Amino acid sequence: MSGTSLDAIDAVIVQCGKDIRLLASHSHSIPPDLRAEILSLCQPGENEIDRAGPAHIALGNLFADATVALLEGAGVAAADIHAIGCHGQTIRHRPGSGGFTVQIGSADVLAVRTGISVVSDFRNRDMALGGQGAPLVPAFHQAMWGQHPRCAIVNIGGMANITCLDMGGIVSGFDTGPGNVLMDYWAQKQHNVPFDRDGTWAASGQVEKELLGRLLGEPYFSQPPPKSTGRELFNGAWLEQHLGGQSTNDVQATLLELTAASISSALSAFTPAQVLVCGGGAHNSRLMHRLQTLMGSVPVRMTNDAGMPADWVEAAAFAWLAWARLNGVTGNAVEVTGASRPAILGALYLP
Ligand SMILES: Nc1ncnc2c1ncn2[C@@H]1O[C@H](COP(=O)(O)OP(=O)(O)OP(=O)(O)O)[C@@H](O)[C@H]1O
Ligand SMILES: [Mg+2]
Image 1: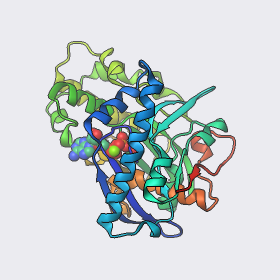
Image 2: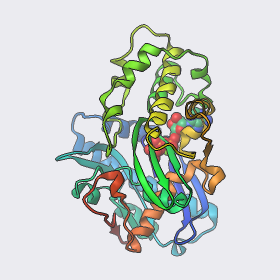
Image 3: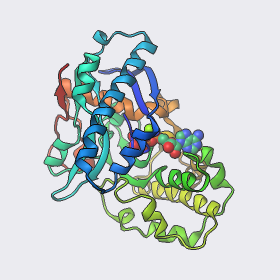
Image 4: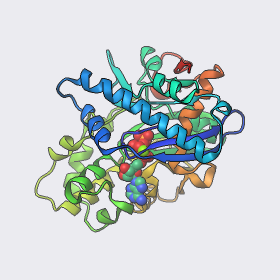
């Protein structure tokens, strides 16, 4: 799994079936030049096909490197792995009527180099059925935590998404908007660091109420689900168009509040009994503190306390979706994506 943040490739070995267990994990770094090329492919630009082609192959090879390192570290043979679930790197996601989604990272290269079958291209079937193609993690969240009463899972990656579960069923789920992506952009631009560790910089500023109001005025936040979003909307240009003369630390404080406020407001219709948080944003102690404050008496905890470390939930979800593909289990939650029917997701690439 390599998500919106492009911080690293997350590789996991997961036992699936009745009992879902994380057996091993590995974080694989992305070379800066490939990261820069992928980031630039996330925005419309010159000669995209001839640039996306080599990036597709290079990323397939990097996914293979990550897999080899994971297996070596865990002392597991390729022959003992059933399949690799590989989401690929999204470079464009435009859901809706006539919409499309594009992920790169060659599954053929990955299958050939590892000798392991690969399940990839998870989103297109759901979109062909009129769905958003996203988020796809709710079915996995349900398999992991479905039995909890009124439990909300919040993934704070580049974007943030929620899954609302109650007594075995999925009540709702959607992308709430930006997770870390705007805070990362601002930290990179102002301090040349990839992210604001623990939200320390944000905590040094004051939330600019007027700016927060303008940002929350973005129509996406009030749009009813099903909905999904990405860097196509929430990017540096989107932020800059709303800025006035605010101090840089007040902007960071406001961006952290934007993430916390948009998540808590997305959860308000569900009134969860508990909130489990995963994704890199779960490590941002300031963000977790703000989210807890906005959620009042509802406990907000990391998924680490509930059977899966926050850092590996997204990757484990795509391992589970590969298992679902091979076992004829549907992977899209239609109450989340809006697809006309449940579907088995993913294409199979043999080694
Ligand atoms: N200690 C920390 N303090 C603040 N932020 C952190 C910390 N650790 C990680 N992060 C944030 O988490 C981000 C990475 O999160 P994650 O890997 O879940 O996102 P992602 O790759 O976009 O995932 P996806 O799109 O699959 O949800 C980093 O870019 C950073 O912003
Ligand atoms: Mg990541």
